[in-house]
Length: 210
Image (cartoon, rainbow, N blue to C red; front, side, top):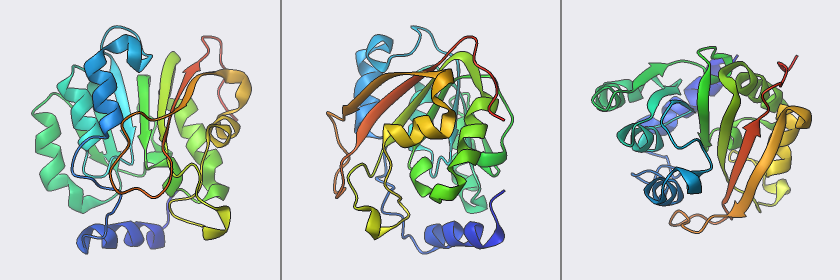
């Protein structure tokens, strides 16, 4: 569970408008792939339930909801609620103030992670893996905008350096197939480190991560 010190750290960043990860819109790679269609997004050619943990101001969540996904967006910063909750409810979604690492609201057909995994201290990534296992349906998809891919480890974080290998290690390789790991074609503006688009498919016979 996220402690009070961590919660205050993130809440203070929003109070003081020190949120450089927030570009004021959904990630351009997500928008491009949604506009190209479900085949390019590497998810089933139909809408379903989507979880967006650590959603911030909800730009990615809103983009998914506007294109037919039943979105459940979560962030632990209470101050985000007045603006985001009505906006996402207007497009059929839901927002909840909660610690996403403790969430148990599945099953979801899609989990979309963008600047959440990289914000978690590396020693707590196993909690993220357990959250995904609890909430993602067998046969579902995890999509991660991996960032910062090439940040030197000695610089620390957040954001902490991450790669698809870190995601797979947190999940347990045997339960997921890595479908895609590519450099984004439509990167965010003003980001110093590389972004990658990673898609994993949860096997139909996967077991819960203990």
